Image 1 (cartoon, rainbow, N blue to C red):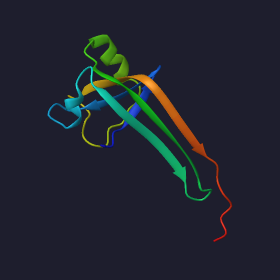
Image 2 (tube, one colour):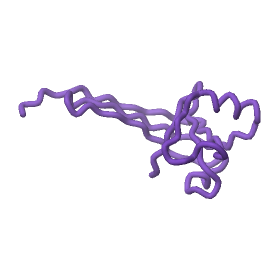
Image 3 (tube, rainbow, N blue to C red):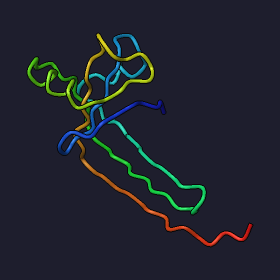
Image 4 (cartoon, one colour):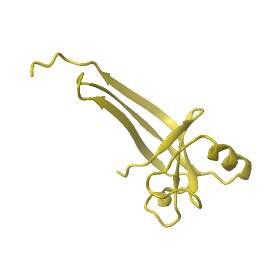
Length: 104
């Protein structure tokens, strides 16, 4: 499991990875699991989504330019020179937890 900054694009998840990084090894046509979640400590509520699917390295120049304009901000230095990697889902599952009253 490695954290990534990501963005959804249509029905897919995309992220960037530099050559030589652990994430760049996912390459194309590998089955991966991707999880995104969030919680609110104040309300004790949250959500989680798990995407299973196959990866592909985006190589089309027009598609790369389009993805570059989606506003993804990289925190780990995977900006310029990094490859876009797309996950094409085969399944998407999710869960939302509603908050419980907290007697603290």
